[in-house]
Image (cartoon, rainbow, N blue to C red):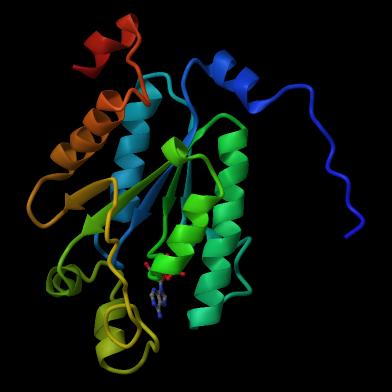
Amino acid sequence: MNIIPYEPVIKKEDRIRLNKHKSMILWFTGLSGSGKSTLASILEEKLYCLGIRTYILDGDNIRTGLNKDLDFSKESREENIRRISEVAKLFVDAGLVVMTAFISPYRRDRYLARQLVAKEEFIEIYVRCPLKVCEERDVKGFYKKARQGMVKQFTGIDSPYEEPETPEIIIETDKITIEESVNNIISYLMIKQLIILKKETVNEYK
Ligand code: ADX
């Protein structure tokens, strides 16, 4: 390939210094209806209040733009996650905390995403919720349609979901509240010193 990447003057380390926090990928994975987008959204609000620069890449949104050419076949899902992984890597380089909320059903695709960044920059959050509960919630009505055969290759019904084996965080959304879930994630980030609360934001957070 005749390509010579250029070397920018301002680097990730400079942006991290400017932002006063590390950049990373918070990779949410789980069944449709497990609560990935909800969690990412509320977490983002909290991080924003803590002065942390964030961005959410969400399945349903990205599939109307960047990935609108993709369906739900195995190949398309792989390509979906491959593109998202590369975009998320760019966001890490841009100095942000990027949250990805995709079913991302295949272990291999999540592994490949992980390989794109440094070890401490990838935090896999398994949003675990039994299929039965997701199906009862059926927020978008897709499970009903999938059971009726009107939506094909639906994850959990006639398309597989490979559970993470060693995710950094597991959130069981059928057992704890959203508030508790988000606090658990923030606690993890603080314990690992991935985010450090500045004095002026501690009171606000409490
Ligand atoms: S992924 O499997 O490629 O990671 P992604 O997260 O982008 O999926 O999109 C999942 C969302 O698309 C679901 O939350 C649901 O709203 C919608 N959707 C539509 N058809 C399907 C399907 N066959 N399987 C799963 N999700 C579907």
